[in-house]
Length: 401
Ligand SMILES: C=C(OP(=O)(O)O)C(=O)O
Ligand SMILES: [Mg+2]
Image (tube, rainbow, N blue to C red; front, side, top):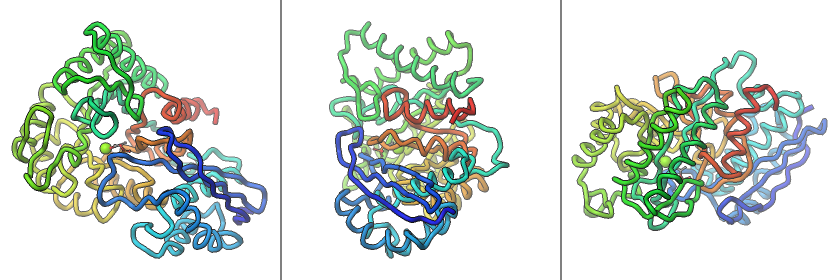
């Protein structure tokens, strides 16, 4: 029934206006799944390789499609993903491209769900998946690699940790995003938006902290539940390996100063979440910071772990963090992303399923987060490609997928 009978690959537009890979998977009984690869800008050095879409499509047509069509059942995700690995033959998907791999992997999962007539989260998570919903982390101000002439820190995030429902959480993040716009206007700061829909004002990080803290507390007062404050520092983008310093617009910090700076921020703003506070190669510095503030906040590895279980094992052994970002395209298949979440959970790490800065209307990550009972999802606050996931979470909670 779920034998794959056709795979079509094409180039479509992502939210930055760049081409990306979309896959359609069709099964013997007419099951259909469609998915598209996202794309990062502040990519980790150890991510699976994204190839130019036309090359990735040509390579996948040559190597992956013949191993899947007429050979593998879409309902068996492990077999689909094993076939993708075998077709690629490298350890980083540099042959068929992680963009082709992840699009096919996700489209096959959707085709498998379609045959069963089940929503994707249920197909992936099974009947006994639990009933938890992820808390959405919403990017409200940002800069770094996502916007020119804006903050050094890449993302200032609203984290509605006390929200009674996913819908309340989603609307709270949008309200914080709107409150930030009001506060910027009061200060006469003109601004546009960055790649993920966050405001990208030309202000320094200190002013961004003031504004986001005020916006969070205003909205918290209105909604009556706790909204926390989080960051994605994207430390690897700030780190200069020659000088071994973190380069901010107004000053440099050596590693000890960076650790102390982040620990102070955790204290001052009661941060509930800090992603990539340090360079992607510096497990020791991550461990020092986690030792210092890991009982008060989540220290999350994105570029540090790149959704890779080998890197996560290393981090667990060294006490480098207490949370991992999960981006399926960093590792190339849903099975690999599942393995990373499972390993994280077994070791007390919180998983944060995440979008990329370049996105499409694909909402697979909403289903992945629910299927795996991930405690958090990071997928922006506003903007069509972001609300595609947020609205899907609302529908899942409403049992309306
Ligand atoms: C979503 C992020 O950005 P990008 O997709 O550019 O890596 C991130 O760094 O967490
Ligand atoms: Mg990140």
